[in-house]
Length: 324
Image (cartoon, rainbow, N blue to C red; front, side, top):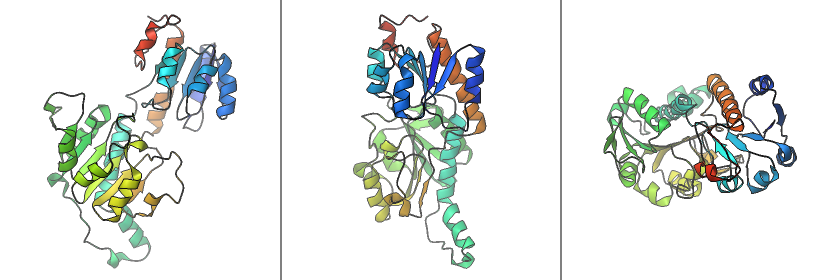
């Protein structure tokens, strides 16, 4: 049995090596797309993180039975083609709930309290030049709106309520008016009534540019916008326009439309925009948990078990897939 790792976001793969060695499974690490296309030809399983697992990659895997995502989102794999080829796709949707909700909350607090610009002024010797004119919310009087009330959205709500924030949420898959003691409202109601808006949805055709001109226009003046999910959720050109006119109080981004943004990105010029390089998921504990659980779930599939987190259930109807 052979496993290929397309890419990973931690210092080493000692955990993977130890796990698969104990199972007498060969493990290979690709060093780029061309190398991946070569190594996947005779692989039984694939572990992937941020690499684009497109149709070419999947069709190159002549023996490929399973593709396991290191993480939650699966927008970087062609699920339709994987299902057609009988490749089981799985993920780990519940491994970094605390880390991502912590990151979102950290951005909310840093932007609202002006931590970064004020610290910068002090370090420049301008202690007495720090202005007190910018809008700062008293959190117990402010409303946090959460778009996407899944695991991470609910954990953020729990933490935010402990700080006194009023929390409202929108989720198209929740029919109740109140869920986890949070009022569930329409998308437009959450957009227009939130002092702080945090996005927690996957990137799909429907959610691409979920926040654009129309939504930004509906948002409150001085609203704070947070995105720790996927970069394509926000129309960055539209966001720049609203930052220019001063309507948006501040923005926190852990993801951007360009996965590797240029230093000349227009959003980088704004003092009230915080950007982190897709690190919301990270802690040593979460990475280690993700590595071992990803290995185990992939190995289980290759040994005939239906994964706990199956992305493409239609694959079970494929003639070459026989899982229990």
